[in-house]
Image (tube, rainbow, N blue to C red; front, side, top):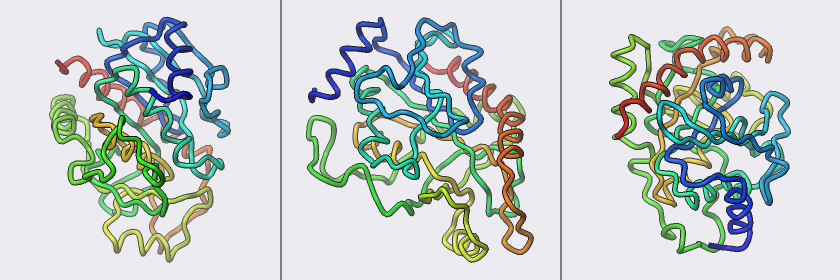
Length: 271
């Protein structure tokens, strides 16, 4: 275990945070799951050695440890974005910490806009593949062989086992859960009409500004991951309207009920 990682782990261990089975990263406007956790410890990101700090106002920047559906969980209430000025190593540092804490699986949520005319605002999409338009990667630079291999296979980037379980639970709970491709861009500017057309042309269903760095880091560390996008706006280039962040947050909050139902029931069914 390298120096910064060890210092972070030692600090978390000193707080009694050890061996959570499941980690969850909660995206924009999606912090309500915390209300269902039997909380043992809440830590501000700023108090954790070497941990980045959320600068986006609606990301609370708290690490929460406790029990959810009889599973020990570690929940990030807020994530880090490239547009905040963090590099890929900083954005994915929490994944190294999760792996060192012996986390077995990671669930990720995000808010995004859809360019698929069959998807609607408020829908959920299970990410089955992605397109990385960051033009950057957490794997650039010297490889840490103690974490994973130099060349990482991405043919099954999102755990097919976890995805099958999410789809099964969605069907049982009568929740519409699309399957689709997520594309990540740098942000924080939204896309132009031409860019939305391009994104649809290359196969995008939902576009956002996160998630892919964490997924790449998970694959490198052999940590199974599943990710769900909450669709907060419809990005039709022929009928494009200015983005209203308050409307995005309200849509995310309304859709979060179904997301929480999925997360909780998947946890219940996991062995």
